[in-house]
Structures are given as structure tokens and as C-alpha cells.
Image 1 (cartoon, rainbow, N blue to C red):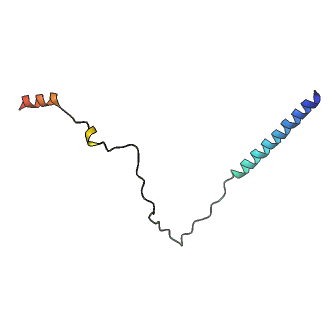
Image 2 (image 1 turned 90 degrees about the vertical axis):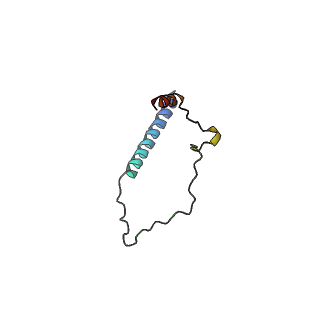
Image 3 (image 1 turned 135 degrees about the vertical axis):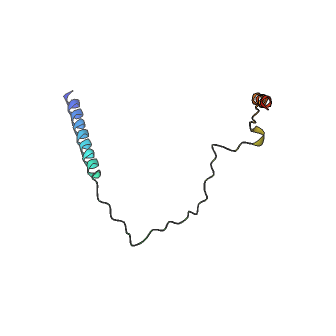
Length: 84
């Protein structure tokens, strides 16, 4: 029984050491470092892209002519005829 417990304790200790090493490595990577200065002696001239613009599939704003909803103002038409 004690051999199994010793094995388990040793494995947990190794796992803790590995986690601490990983944390130390990640902290070292997170240290901010200076960025090199850009070269201003060579101006940047952007070039037009050679790709065609994308054509969206959705949402479809164009409705077919037969599916367009037509507005009928029957109540308003009666009001306008009475006012005239």
C-alpha cells in the first residue's frame, strides 16, 4: 500500500514541478520587448488589390418583381377624396 502512495506522491510532485516550469516559461514570454523603429527613408505606397470584390450571398436585398409587396391605401384614399 505504501509503495502505491509513494508512487502517487512522486507523480504529483513531478506534475507540480512541470506546472511551475510551464508558468515560469509563460511569464518569460510575456515580458514586453522593444519593437524596431520603422524605416521612414523608404515611403510605403499601397497598391490596388488584384482580387475581385466579394459578392455577398446573404442577405438578399433584391426581391423578384412578382414577390414585391404593393401598398394599397384604401382607407387613406377615402379620406383624401372626402377632403377634396
